[in-house]
Image (cartoon, rainbow over all chains, first blue to last red; front, side, top):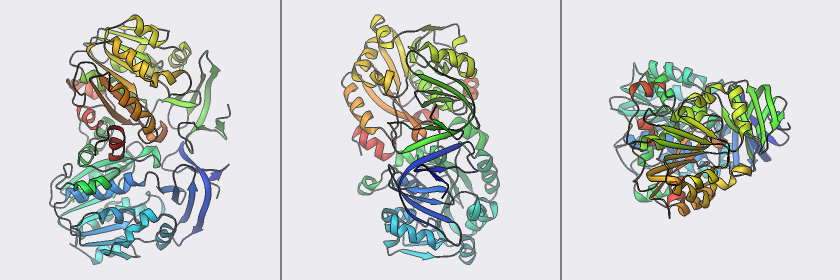
Length: 287
Length: 287
């Protein structure tokens, strides 16, 4: 457990050389190796319980809403009538919790390859894992690409809530995976994927967006602020099949649903697509 | 120099307990105490040269543009015709560099209390300190409140580029300082100040905005992403004297000027005022 030194967890990764986020540890709650990765859960001094996979922070209870709400509601509110939703990854359950806030959604399937993540989340991250309680949710412990191959032309929205492109998740950042999602989408469908950070990974984001733009009808990039992800933000790649851009939502949350949101709003939906000049220029080549 | 451990600078501060940003140090370039504060400059592995005051990162060459451009251009483009601009703090020169990009500005005065910051910036942060080269710039080494007391009803835009409300800058986050700025503004003028972080300091931001809203015509809050500030973002308090809200800019940069920006754009100006639901609710009490 050499990432905890003098009581602080240090997140040092090959994807953000020379910089690190540190959180003060109150108590290690679980640390073991699953079939796929190293799983660590600790209670922090300032950010509630924290889930770490292969040394990288996935969730803290304090700021997780920023990520879960945005990766779920950007595609769902951009779709006029999503009925069937696929979540790939997302073992902590937070994305399921958000998808379940859409009353019109009839079926939510999660494909998570590592059951170990689901198990620790149910134990230590109950405010996220309550997403599993919704009766519309079913869980497949299997490879997302394989599941999509067996379920073509099936989903209105596909959300890929993955870890970084190192280790088991690296294939999720490649064109073949986006082609598989495209085939598994219904006409008019939308995918939204974890798209790394505009402050760190433009060299990864740009070619991926260029490549999948040849298949999808539209490809856009949005982002959310989130203090415990590297550089304090994470982006989303949002692509459509037979549909226009997703910058303006097609639907709005009811007042009651909006009151329950900590991060998302209709105004923020639109603002999240407005990138800093350096990122817009680099990704889209526009001035 | 106990903030550098095993070759990493750790930014641990009372305003962000339990969390810390760390940067790998290549070489310490300067470390001394001025009359006001501890000044450290180091070359980092990943973020160029870094200026640290009293243990807190003020500037890294890699991401400084996000802060300098936004704190300068939000008020300047919200003003139809700014002629005379006061910068309080900002000893590194980066805000001067941005203000000087407005050809209509005739006079730029900087009040910096600590000449030590100007000196190290001229030596180690030349891409910021080049702001001092503009012939419209004059520098006063003195207390900003005292200068404003002697210059009432004088400025179209006042920008306060301060460190955090601990130590010498703490008075800059109090109502009397905002009252002093109000008196030093011309009718139709705009102030823009460093407004701490919505992810950390809502309990500081909310009462300050409530309080100064009694004096100013409008008070708003905007933010920028910036990886090396605590939690990866910093906000701006923007308040006006005899003018409406600043969310929509009154002017747009020329194409040539826009091409030189790394962060700001007209679209981002508007988007930067759209806060996450939790922050909007806390600061403004709106749903």
